[in-house]
Image 1 (cartoon, rainbow, N blue to C red):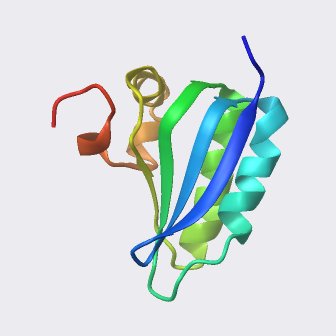
Image 2: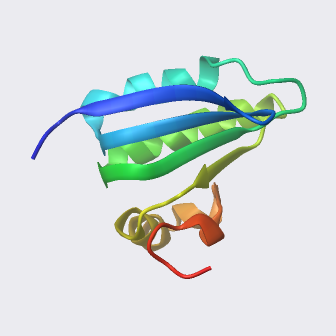
Amino acid sequence: MSHRCVVDVADDDGALRIRVIGEVDMACAATLEETIVSAPVPPGGKVLLDMAEVAFIDSAGISAIIGAHKKRVAEGIPVTLVEVPPLVGQLLKLTGVDTYLEVAHQDVVGEPS
């Protein structure tokens, strides 16, 4: 199992899309949180956290997302998880994190809309 994690930032029609690729674990968590918190968001924009290519996420990864979410929401910037793979979505539901974070369930990869 590879421990590679890539965090990519792009503009997405007035939103900031942060694409996460690979395994979101202790080795990647700090980078992900810092990127979510510090990347510039267009005025009135939001953060879309694209999880489509996340193969694995652990408690450090979830904690990083929650921490970044708290900071961005305090700034008035909404954060939404999109393109969530089924296994990641199941983990978010199992831990109850999906009730705290905004998860665009219609964008769950592999599940019907």
